[in-house]
Image 1 (tube, rainbow, N blue to C red):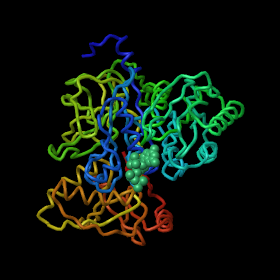
Image 2: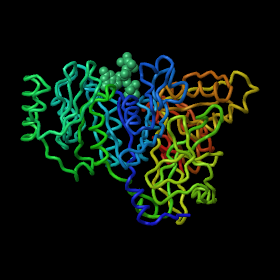
Image 3: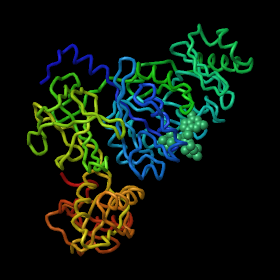
Length: 528
Ligand code: G4P
């Protein structure tokens, strides 16, 4: 165990860059992820989105439902090597109904790439996810995509980022033209141009220049484009924020890149600069204080559980972020919640559906652990001290539905499905006090649809869902609970562990109930 010398170990950890891409749906996250994977040689052919709608599928989408709907439902993890770095990309569902999953995934990332559609600017989901990143204080890099389309003026986009999100920005590159006239980007940091050539602008040439007024740029652009590039950059040099790496690291200044993922424009400038600036694995907070990635003792936490990722195997994978030390296949670690020692025999690394058995991994990496039902989201593992990492965020459900299993003979399979899917953290399950009503709670409507679909496809159970009018839920704690006090526009139910939960139709019903039950605690999350 831990054969690696301290020097090699430190080198390995410092090579790691683990980040998540956050965006509003349709901004181009799947496309950008694929282009990055292509650069890293991790895939040979991008399942282009156009193709995705026909027969090919984006590499990062593995569930049938994602293919049908063309959205990313689950977060996947992908690793590739590029220029001496080990890059871990955490893909996150863009759809707001899955934001819980996204929030948890962000806890496993050391930085975030915020992808923005140049025509649409900062959108609703971008704002929410940005807030989560800001709370964590992680560095945020911005990629403004679809510059090949007629979008907003780059200055207006920067202003919008600063006004709406409240973060200062520093453009790392600047588009030369835009829309149909886009012919390249000028890399301010490396003083070079990435030029788009060929009849379809599909050849990319990277050339060093002396500055933005270099003849080389003049020769390949029109006078108008050259002049406006020079005007824009002079203005930025004089009036723009200076580049301040300390502020980038604190998440107070976002380096901005312009490009077009689908055409591969600006992607290399982005990747090269991003890898130079993105942080190495960060320390994590725990019950024993900060745990440094360079501590050679292995520790980590589970941030995601996914059942049946591969229909042929019907297995369950727990995704673990390694926070410190080195992981060696077959090592024994302590599962802190249960106090048991477990052997990590078949850990996996992912390229969407393709998995590799991983022999060694280091702080910053994400590994998939085969889970025979022992892990829960938020579980900590460590070899030495009883390290418990800080809790992951949970969200009280806001939508509820009564579940009816169409064929009573399938009840056993239904229970198994409930066990697994609730452990994944995407739905919550309740039962009425009388025990004859099954109720599901979710944060977003689409989670109901995914639940219904997965029950059918993965567990062979047909269900009917009937929406209930409740909108709020609170865990109830008291020495004595009187169900009669939870009858008006509310209902008292049990959660999976037998805790009392009250469901309310509206804020007013909840307040009334709080007033009537002075000695009762109303908690947003389940008691520990
Ligand atoms: P997402 O994962 O963020 O949801 O976005 P995705 O990559 O699936 O891209 C959404 C759409 O935007 C796709 O179009 C994709 O081809 C297009 N797109 C991505 N990057 C660029 C870019 O740099 N320039 C342009 N012009 N388009 C880009 P689609 O699904 O085929 O069609 P539609 O959604 O536009 O109808």
